[in-house]
Length: 147
Image 1 (tube, rainbow, N blue to C red):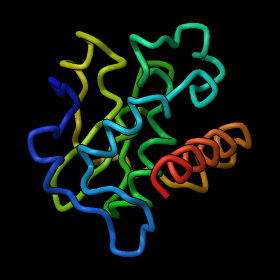
Image 2: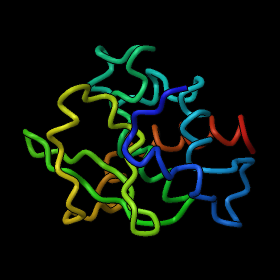
Image 3: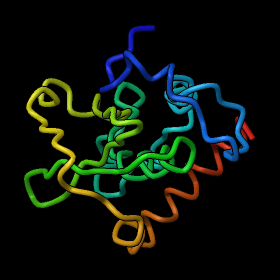
Image 4: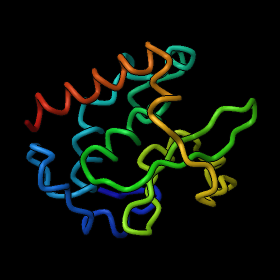
């Protein structure tokens, strides 16, 4: 399989926290599991759901995925400011940047600036109940698959 997400070159080296209680060997394996049916229309942001497809599984999944990654692997969640004022979320683990959902942007991904200047918080993102519910769904589906 050809991986195209940001940080794929070192993702196999990123190991889960000891207390994550999931059968996962690495961040790379998490990407495979999420791609294999966990990312779905129901976990996509509602405002983006009409454009979600099996061919673009990462569409509308960034914040809930980034906070799930933080649960499992630690690190920090940062955001890239997007037109319209929203943030596209990604992770920094062990000083390295990872964006498992970058593929949703296609060629536009080349123009994203990952400067680690905009920390993102759960409190802000999960103040939106629908987003928190999607996060819980994503987490539950992963636990069912690898718990």
